[in-house]
Image 1 (spheres, rainbow, N blue to C red):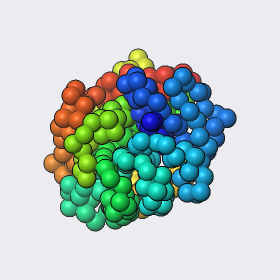
Image 2 (spheres, rainbow, N blue to C red):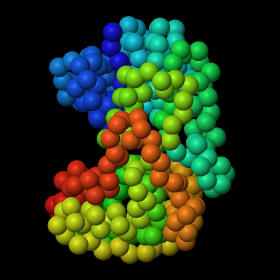
Image 3 (cartoon, protein in one colour):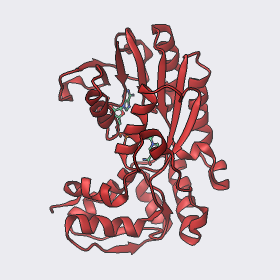
Image 4 (cartoon, protein in one colour):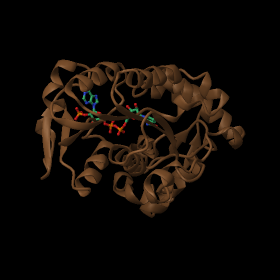
Length: 286
Ligand SMILES: NC(=O)c1ccc[n+]([C@@H]2O[C@H](COP(=O)([O-])OP(=O)(O)OC[C@H]3O[C@@H](n4cnc5c(N)ncnc54)[C@H](OP(=O)(O)O)[C@@H]3O)[C@@H](O)[C@H]2O)c1
């Protein structure tokens, strides 16, 4: 019996695959583009699109459990197809906003959308489901990679905004524990990094990792928003700006640091300093 990993080619999913393989598991990878996958021993690659449930049956048939990547409208249909195929356990990640840890999060654009997806899994009849709700990803710092590589300045609307950003390795390790261990069924765990880090501190850490001091310039929120429309839904851009403006003024309004990663994985969550070191190659060069 094997474990199906959707989102397996992504920044988080590739670590889920790596950890499952080192635990000696047989892994099924779902991708829309099998020709791009570097196939490793112990893996089987399936072509499928989460938005088209008919393309998933081969990947699901015979799988014991599955990690479900958050293509939100696809969660309910995937869970239904998985239950029909006899999949016993499904682990999904959404985002910390879904937990409503702050008053701001309760009014966010994304909360009802994440909750609807989580509830679709919870109500699907899958025997064992777990939802993980990661804090904003440290990988969001990759948005700055092009300007850092070209020697430019990082433009931020709220350099002092703080957040307990999480290393993708910690999200993956938590997913793997929820897939392999008992005791996480019907649970929704919020995952965070080990400390609040401001965006200006993140830029400084990246500068230290690549051995080059970096500059930050404050820009008006409307300029960031206009640019963000290229890669973010408007509702998420607004949620982010609200969070950044509030936490820059008052860090006590940030998502709190939680011990969940250490509780799930048995080791502390990685710092942003470690993330920057792991990703130095993404920011180095011109
Ligand atoms: N950024 C944050 O702060 C944050 C916080 C909380 C939650 N999230 C969630 O995390 C996600 C990003 O995670 P990531 O950085 O690990 O992902 P990523 O690097 O952007 O990779 C996306 C993965 O999803 C797969 N995928 C996308 N659409 C698919 C579809 N229709 N059918 C099958 N596979 C599909 C892709 O597979 P192929 O291309 O190989 O098919 C790829 O493996 C976001 O979408 C968001 O929902 C993000």
